[in-house]
Image 1 (spheres, one colour):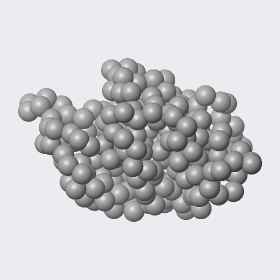
Image 2 (image 1 turned 90 degrees about the vertical axis):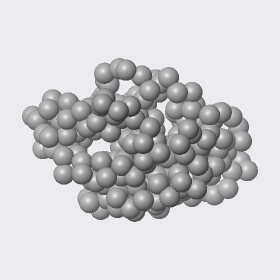
Image 3 (image 1 turned 120 degrees about the vertical axis):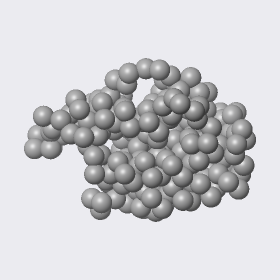
Length: 230
């Protein structure tokens, strides 16, 4: 059983958007998992075998959380009934209290489809008298992370300090050489540079070194104010 599950459209999206948080939560004793919805292939420099190896290496840097791939089609991901049933079955099996989903606004159709699929599968997961495997279960909350293909300034509900986890996040990202290293334009900042610039920006606003932003469609409840950063 998991405390939190990160649903990632492609291998590397979890690391890009919530890699530091994955490491931090595990340090705090949380049981965290990652579900990649697709293989992410084909890509110009990648292959199924290479992407699997890159994902396994990246996962080790994250602390080796539980991870599976749902095997849905890359580039044509759809929030249809069959996929909704498949994802709801995973929710019932691993029973996470918290789900991390991609932010709902993006240029990549797979990302926006993944968001809708997560939201609809969360509802389906609680249905009784259904043919979905497992016992009905309703994850308590969805938080949305940013791994977007738009040049936007995120508008998060809160940010989480990941200063101590940044090295692990960057090490995991560097494992995806076919996606984030070897295909970057020479002489210009690459994706990993951009990710670190953004975590530094949000960390600066929160008074720490680096932070990851998160959004919520629903109010975020607090049991106290002692953890607020100035």
